[in-house]
Length: 140
Image (tube, rainbow, N blue to C red):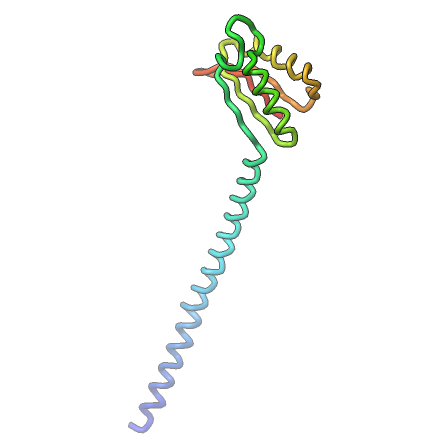
């Protein structure tokens, strides 16, 4: 009976060491691993967010962007294109123009950009036909 206290203390000490070694330390390592993973995902999302902020996308219907009777830009299209290209000189631009025959309209956009004295080397202009839409893409 007089050693019962020492035996209980020894059992409690063994249980404490066992709990620390096999449960607490593993749980602590798992938490640290999860913190590193969360930090990695946050950095990845920040990079993605910054990349999306640098890329700006505009989309216009053909009726607004081109004159209805000709293959040239309408006054609205000229104003919008000039505004977009002048305000976003250092950012990446992708401009989509939905139209019937995209190859016909790329020349009028190229001519307008050349008239505005903007270097054409900075832009990629292409006409694309998709199953549901046809569009002119201007990308920088």
